[in-house]
Length: 266
Image (cartoon, rainbow, N blue to C red; front, top):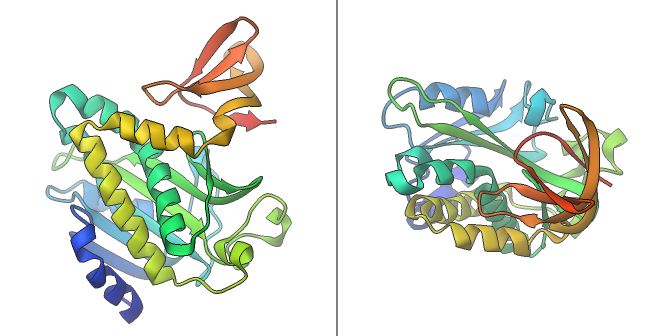
């Protein structure tokens, strides 16, 4: 592991809680989520972290490619086991993993850079109308840890993190701030914030997560959206987030509840 990453993680050790029990670093790897999934199949993998300077097969939701060139972004995957929480809260904790991660990463960016970012359901961080970061949660448990989830995230640190053709839809921390960003510091802040919000999940403090998400998602109410259903396309106006993390959309006189799928923000 590079010295700057090792130093930053050591300095943040008291704030990492369950995370960072094992940290694996790659100069280049296919996908950090794939490596973390292999770790997740073994017992005692909770809190393992996989970090890469570059990915050759990074991916986002619905199998989309995640451009991951060297030295330009933060590419990280973490093994979590929210299903091991108390029986009364385990299922809900698992459903809210992605939203909790969005809150955590927005807090980490604010703590590390001073930038305030917006959350967009279910898994993206935006500044204005341009995407800064994405989150991908995948089930990955095996016999050793059947309830494991791999939580991957990518944060654009410099403009080189995305193709120039996406310049009107993507942004980076350095582009917004006009100065270099310490990726090691950002990694430490991200893991520390994830640790806090993971503790909230395991303890059943769901209102704290949902309220924080709502406060950081200005598009969650009053924004026009469209999405596909089995019977065709629907559109409506966002009406908030329910207690299970579903996006509520007003369509005429009724409220539709979206729990998965692709939402187009109009």
